[in-house]
Structures are given as C-alpha cells and as structure tokens.
Length: 320
Image 1: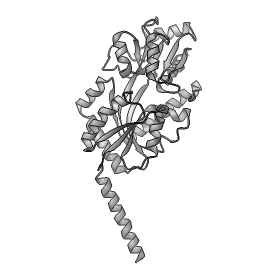
Image 2: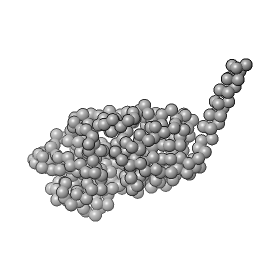
Image 3: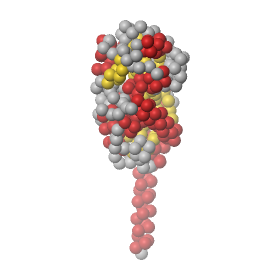
Image 4: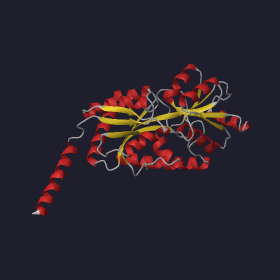
C-alpha cells in the first residue's frame, strides 16, 4: 500500500510539474541586465524585452543589476530558481572574459543554460582627430615609430574595450599604453578632449562623436561593414586579419531550467528576431541581428571564452 501511495504521489508531482512547464509563462519574467540604465547592453535589452513580452504574452521586466563588469547580475541569475522567470542578458564581459581574470563565483558553462544569442554589437577603433592617422594601417605605423607614446583608453581593466586594444597589440606587435577608466563615459570624455588618443568600443556609443567629427573612425572589428556607417572599412580590409571584436547579447537561464521552458523561450526569440521591424530597431542602434539556438549559443560561448583566455594570458591581465 505504501508503495502504491508513493508511486501515486510521484506520478501526481510529475504531472503537476509537466503542466506547470506547459503553461509557461504564467507570470512576469525578470530580465537581468548587468549594466546601469542607458548602458550599451541596456539600450539593446529594453526593445528586446518589449518584443519578447509580446511573443510570450507576459511582461518581461528589465532589472538593472550593475557592478563588477556585469558579474553581479550574472551571479544573481546563476543562483536563481531554474524556472524560467529569472533570465540574464548574457554578454561577453561576465561570461567569456571575467572567469579568466577573476573568480566570479559561477562557471559560465556549468551554471547557465544557453537559450539564444540575438545580437552582436560591432566594435570600432577610433582616434582623436589630432592623431596623424587616417587609417588603421597608418595608426599601426605611427605606433611603431613612437613606441610607448600613444595611449588607449578603456572602460576599465579587463573589460572588452581593454581586451580589444590588447588583441590589436598582439596581432601587430605595437607598443601602446593602456589607461583604464571607471566606465565608458569618462573614457570617452578624455578621448574627445585628447587626453588619450585611441579607443575601441561599440558603435552605438561612439557613432554620434564620429558623425560630429570629434572622433575619427579607422576600422570596424567585424567581418562586415556596419549598416549604420558603411564607409568605415573592416579591420581585415585594413590589413589586420583576425582582429574581430564585438559585444554580443544573448539570453541565459539558470542551469537545470527545464528543456521545455528553454525551447519555449528560444521559439519566442526566434519569432521576434525574424520580424523586420526588430532588425531595423537594432540597426538604428548600430547593432547587428544574429540568432543562434541553445546548442549553437553554448558552442559560441565556449569559442569566445577560449579566444579571450589567450589574450588575457598573453597580456598578463588581471582584474583590478
């Protein structure tokens, strides 16, 4: 009798669990963004969240948990209940870079379930107009002629803008001096003022300064020229092959989130990403649409992690 009762209870629990998953989502979903409002990730996450809510039929609320280069937000999601109601906008900083420079308290492949990658933000190398270089090749030649004289700013130690410049150094052998700031905004202020000469970051934040003439764009670190500024050549076109850097945005859930929930989320993201109006929203911000499913996104993270591990090791980079 006890065995019958136990079996009945287990069957009932399984049916209840299956029904709960099948009804997903039944309440609002929290989308964690590891940046402050208005940051590069935030300006992509908000229109994405609004359209995802339309597809799922439930509100998707952006929750900004800034700090430690995105690690705080990522750690929060890694420790959340695996029910699909707390998700992370996964980016390269806390997912592919941070584990190689510090101990973030989570393992990107063990503690998260990949849902989908939905966009990439191409990076661009810019200089202050006073720098006598109109192309990336000319900048490299200038740096070789003046080793240790040119300074590149970044949003902070071990962030993607920092590693972008480190990758350029690795590929070309030039000697330029890193100047870390506490965020992209103060770095750009000093760049526009000419206190640092070089910067490498995403198009959305830099395009207004490029268009106004306050900064000069030398090359985009992407396989293709960006739709927002097609006159800027790629790094490969400028003669530096392998110099590819982007800030990518995807959705990650806590590990052990049911497959049915992952599949439901992926289907919704694929549906919204197929809509021309969403693609136009991204392009208006200098962002490229790139949709990868769970398995592809997981492999993408693995490749990105391995690539940046080499750059971190070569540059002896550690967290502040």
